[in-house]
Amino acid sequence: MYRYFMSVVPFRLTPAIITTIVLVTLLLLPAPSGLNADAWTLVAIFLTTIVAIILKVMPIGVMAMMAIVIVAFAQVTSHSSKGAIADALSSFSNPLIWLIVVAILISRGLKKTGLGNRIGLMFIALLGKRTIGIGYGLAICELVLAPFTPSNTARGGGIVHPIMRSIAGAFDSDPAKGTQGKVGTYLALVNYHANPITSAMFVTATAPNPLVVDYIARASGQSLHLSWTMWALCMLLPGLLCLLVMPMVIYLLNPPELKVTPNAVEYARGELTRMGPLSGKERMMMGVFAMMLVLWANVPAMILGDAYTLDPTAVAFLGLFALIITGTIDWDDVLSEKSAWDTLIWFGALVMLAEQLNKLGVIAWFSADMRDAIAASGMGWPSIAATLVLAFVFSHYLFASTTAHISAMMLAFLTVGVHLIPPPYAPPFLLMMAAGSAIMMTLTHYATGTSPIIFGSGYVTMGQWWRAGAVMCVLELMVFAVVGGVWWKLLGLW
Image (cartoon, rainbow, N blue to C red):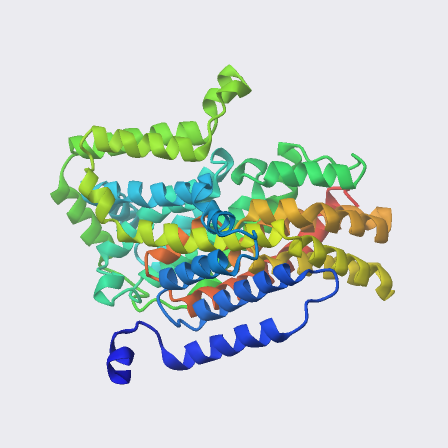
């Protein structure tokens, strides 16, 4: 019976034992002052789930389902079974999660129609002599789209990622074949890490940025109110430097097996000639993408007024529906896209845990304790500023949504900083917090909506993702602190 059990149960024994020890240890510890027993139990469940995912005890979707089951039966969020299961499943009505799912489904159309392959070949024809050149092409694509796509998930996951996959496919770099290391791993990481950088560069590049503008204005007593132009100007130089450096750093961390591709340009041009003119389905795919980009960029609202502002998820569903009713993709394509449904489960579970941590007061407790400790430490203002920025950014390991993180913690951190930092030096701190609110997306495979789309495509292992995320986060914070600090001084902001 034991041998049968070990042969069929999909978990790795040693990681499972370690994870169980972590859970039991946390549950045996008394709840910290300021947290009730239910809140501390939820913290234990969350941390154990993260450890289980990192150690790969079972497939990530199974780990996510485990978290849902435990929350439902532990009844820490509600003292009735009906309320607990409702809480455990609450995130599956979250529009962000469905935006991710639909973006993955839409990307299937690029593959099926051949348009993605054509776009990939065009990139190779332009920049394909070296793999790093293709990486810079993806970064430039992100930068061009960023001012016009308020959803970083739609931009990085729905537009750029299908192009990246098509380019990787042109080099026969496919996780299903075990050849992702040829160019795919490198390009997937560049695809992802361009997304947080461009999100930091424009107010309209990601959904929570307007909230950041509001919080900075409130914390500073309206003395620093970032207009669209001022934000873009402040983030321009450090952002461009990060985009310049990032593909090279990723290249060093995860070098592609194919570094020089001298025949790639000729191959791409030959393939484009062989493909001939655009087919009808390719034209339909281009039309749907153009429609979605216009709507994601809020062009109707710019022309007709705020009443015509459209939610990015609603636009994504419109695009998917348009592809289905025009025969560009069919319902079987939707049903067979396993990565979309896998992502729905595991990302939904992590979002649920993060939301419930906030609901039970864990995030507020963490913020208050950090605030009190800093105020009582007697540190100088540079150390206070650095501690606040680093604590805010790296606490994103606890979150599966930048909007939730910013909503829960940012105003408290900004307020403490403004009270403890001399007024002449407050602006660079506030701008670092603004930059950090996007840079923190680099850290994990669940950090923002874009990450599960790219991670779910299978090109990058979890270890590669977290290592690159930590390195890029620290590097980008240093660039914004040093280069950004000097740049903001030249702009006369402090």
